[in-house]
Image (cartoon, rainbow, N blue to C red; front, side, top):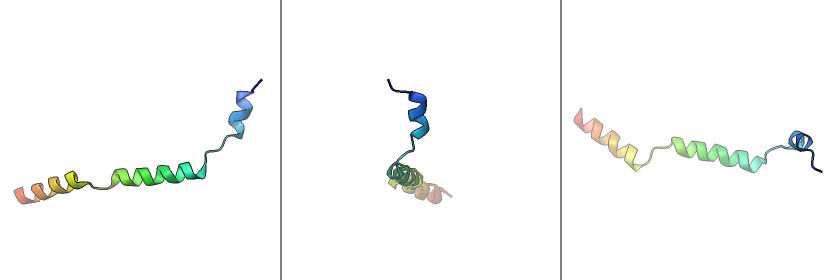
Length: 46
């Protein structure tokens, strides 16, 4: 039978997954076209 506690102790996430998380989080913080257009419109109103 599988001892889940022992298996969890052995677990370590893949470095590729961690790298992918970093890239995804950085992309989420980037401005997209909508953000740029809203910023331009806000500047024009001022």
